[in-house]
Image 1: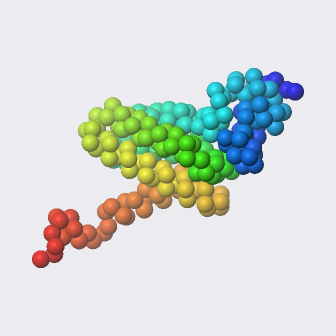
Image 2: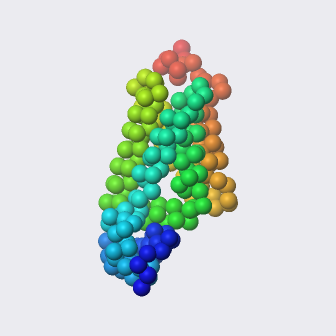
Image 3: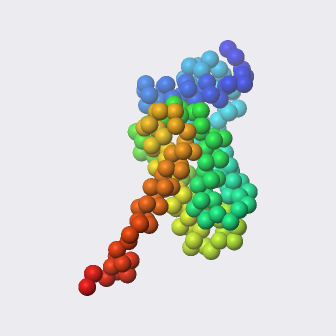
Length: 202
């Protein structure tokens, strides 16, 4: 049995996803994942601290890419544009080319309440990290929180549409489309003055 191969992490993830589909997350052991991948348990633990991190191992890398993208953005773009540009760069580096795995991961997490709770926690941590990165660029705290929350809404919408589309459109395009849709929703071309001011139109 092979102890180490360059594609070990991907093979272990694929094996884990197969087993999670077949017998559920809780019913799957690390030993079974390693055996299915043709690797040792030691090799598994060289890549992942536990079986749950097979699903969440990219979260930290994605967060670093997003934060670095925000910090490295040099023009005077609006805050939300800065966030979405960073999300696009991070998605290119982390998710593009892995659509099938992202889809399987999404379905496994949605089927397990404990995993879904962890996913929501990861999303909240990323939102906080984005807001912190925006504040470090000099943005006011409230504006940073709003831009971070809006950026995460764009991210979640884009990933969902990317998973469902299955047409080869890159995730960064879905992010652009989601940003455009958000702007159309919150800033229509002809807003009702009564709604803006809380009046009843009379």
